[in-house]
Amino acid sequence: MSMPTIQIGLLGLGNVGTGVLNILTHHADMLSQRTGKKLKVKSILVRDLAKYHHYKMPGVKLTSKPEDILEDPDIQIVVEAMGGENPAYGFIKQALTSGKFVVTANKEVVSKHKKEFFELAKQHKVDIYFEASVGGGIPLIRSLKVGYAANQIQSLYGILNGTTNYILTQIGDQGMEFDAAIKAAQKLGFAEADPTMDVSGLDTAYKLSILAAVAFKVDVQVSDFHYEGIESVTLKDIQLAKELGYAIKLLAIGYRMGSAGMVFRVHPTMIPLDQPLAAVRNEVNAVFFVGDSVGESMLSGKGAGGSPTGSAIVSDIVDIAFDTRVRVSQDGNGHRHVVLDGVESPHYENKRNLEDALSKVNLVNIEDTYSQFYLRVLVTDTTGALAKLASVLGDQEVSISKMIQRDMVGNCAEVVIVTHKIKESYMQQALSNVKALSCVKKVESVIRVGLEEV
Ligand code: NAP
Ligand code: HSE
Image (cartoon, rainbow, N blue to C red; front, side, top):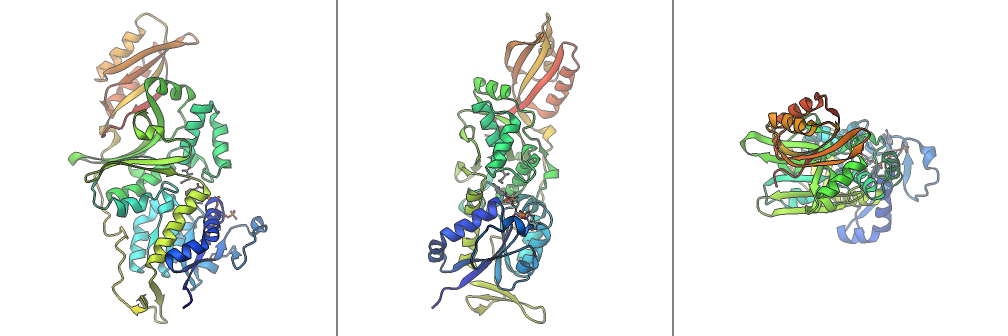
């Protein structure tokens, strides 16, 4: 008996699309043996055909017309590796509506439209897979959905952006300039088409909202929580952090805060050097989490790059291939038919779909959360300046854990402070009072310290 073939349509042939194509080509035999099916890329969509004239892909059609894939009845799986909200959103909806499985690496579109995609997939008896959208090559989504299904996740801390982790590592290790580090990340294929999405923390925020759905089963958008990027982190802060026993990472944070609700946020964080996340370097991503059954766990691996991301996408294709004993079709009257192992079945239901599981949640505002803070402040070198600074902090109940006076910067003394844990709103009030002091020239840096719930 000849082996059945699953035809794949690939939307996009950039870093990720090329990674997918290479893996499917080089591991064709291994993957056929594993799934019992041939996994064949039939057509690939790009915007500018001329740019790809050097590609030699026998038996694969390169096209700039989306309908060549979305309206091709032979194509069962659409892999979206284009990026951006539009036209990806419309293409994914069209694919799901016409009974095609979808695999995507696009965190922006999944983050914004996940609920609608889950509903459409359920309605049309297919599914959308998005392993590559968070954590690159780490099988994070599948692990949280299935591998850790026996747990209620209590808290989660993730380094979810390869570009910013690469930049922070390169600045800290090599003293590389910020702009040069971004260019290097772009050259290595880690950065988004617009790298401000990485640097501003937005890419990490999209990923956190996806993990909120997968790990905590809650429906949140990035506009619901606070996020910041790494624009203001300097070489000096990275070096001082190391002296104090910390590494600075852009951290995605999610945890349950008792009956108050859930906390989600993204910002640079000083992580104690003995915490495993502190050792995660370059484009490597990691998620440290606490499950009520398993306890503390960490998953890590390459979080960006065409090949690691291609690995995650192909794992989704394999997962679908295991499941595509199911074939969905539509008759002339517009009725959908689901055939399971060759037998018509009205009952096919994919329980991996999160549509039924997602709920709204009460979100705790960042002002009502508690952290330690690192401050670097320039004060005039005058008698009583340090006492005034400590007193203004104390007025808002900010208590100092460490205070170091560093070298002179021009005619100012550089003061580094690490506070005890304090409510965010008190700290923000204290900071505006500090900035108003005549002896304070500038508050150079404010960075939150520690993993508050662990
Ligand atoms: P990329 O290198 O810029 O490639 C994008 C590809 O999509 C190009 O082939 C482009 O064709 C095509 N494309 C874009 N818009 C199109 C449109 N409107 N119509 C037809 N084709 C279109 O991007 P990438 O780095 O591969 O990233 C793709 C997706 O994967 C993004 O969602 C990204 O966030 C995600 N992702 C990337 C990584 C990574 O490490 N790079 C990791 C995980 C997830 P043209 O060249 O003709 O414009
Ligand atoms: N630009 C993203 C990053 C790609 O650097 O993490 C992986 O999602």
